[in-house]
Length: 375
Length: 85
Image 1: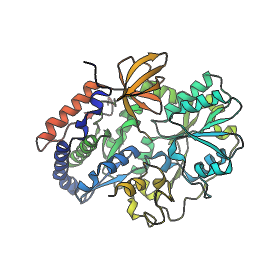
Image 2: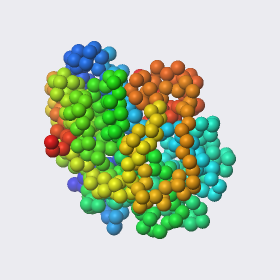
Image 3: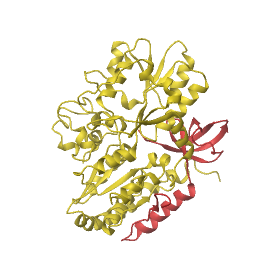
Image 4: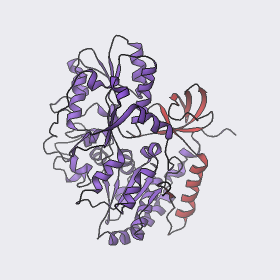
């Protein structure tokens, strides 16, 4: 018999009601003991925007006991991109004659003015949403008289993909393709949170697809240096419930370690070919994080060898820090210090149709998830 | 943004593959997973395969969930991560 197209990866068992109910009752049984060890309240953080959406869409948050709080971390790429970088993207869009190619998520993020990529179209900008950076490379090959710029933002999942596309552009000898490299790295982002003396995070649900690239080894400092629970987790409802149960058990035992719930995808060493390409095309940078500012060695920029593909350099733009929207709590939310409903703008001045901050703009931002699915 | 979808490789030509996502077929680059072959399952993000998938591990995870969550009082074990000490 021919195997089903996605085989056991798309089995309905991943969202089985009876198994989920059993997992929730186990979670309710474990939560009080874990909370007692954590001082009355247990705070777990899902680091990845795709997890934020999966948690919200499943409706499981309403089933959690009151001692358990799930926070959203700094893992939505659009949300952590600084206002200054957004302004740079908009400046690129307004360079006469260029074609901007981007993932759809960036389209409605507002710059310091009221402009976003979508409304820049009204001012003549040619902005196109693509599925893959390879679509942008193909466009550059098809339109040799136009400069094609890809808006590269993201974490370790996306950086090697864009790196590989840039390598293909170089191999094809394309002189009219460039990209931004506003990439950020997950392990240093977590270290940023953990080194804050005010942090009250007891466990991290680590991002499944970033980990598919980097493996599980880079997270050891979380358990060893900071004694905080952590587990690499998949994205199906049962994966997430299993991940939470594993975190609660680690907290109760007082013996944190890096566990891998998503072992059907993630290994200790990760994807070595992708890591090699990332290292070839990019080098460590000091990116500016929303609400935090610049932090050394927490991101990636083009390496010297690939500097000619850097859109910011090619169009001679200068980065300048810019203030975040007034009243917006995105920064606190990204650091796990507030939940979306704590923001005075949430659901009032700030909604998906008229978003103030990026956590509401991005489809996987914490505020957009809370607004769409409720708590 | 880190959304990735599993699919099965139908055919390989050079560094490119045709991948079947439960009936939808798309061209996918194998630049990041050069070892992938026909009939392998891959995880695809933004037009690139980013990891080979292990069907037996997926079945194993489901079996663990079924066994442990069907009884009360159990948490499925995660594998030890973090690499060699």
